[in-house]
Length: 123
Image (cartoon, rainbow, N blue to C red; front, side, top):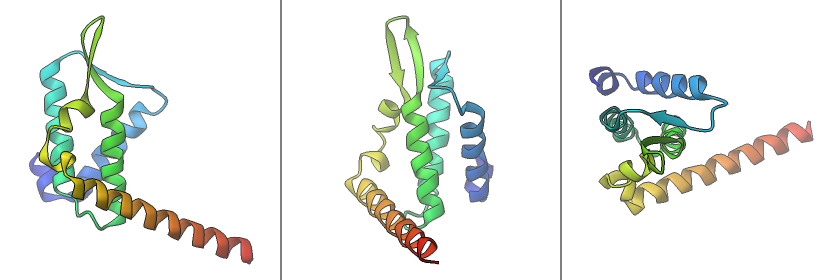
């Protein structure tokens, strides 16, 4: 956790490693609820250390959301507890401002991508 607090690049490397390792899998399953809670705390800490108006931080937050949708704890054969349901209880993820800024930044990124594609097609 100290590394995440002191070095934002560590957060990006951590998220990238999870995405690369789990790429191709439909989900990430935890066998231990406490381990999933620790993982939730790590992801929440990463989000708290992000600045919402930066593109790199948008990508990190988007990845945190993606990972949390794919991660669960199998309580019993019939019951899955998804990580997104756990982290959604945190103030930051339940804030309208968080989602508003995330959506606005996503729209800006999309506009930039469209302009770049237009320029590339025009040359």
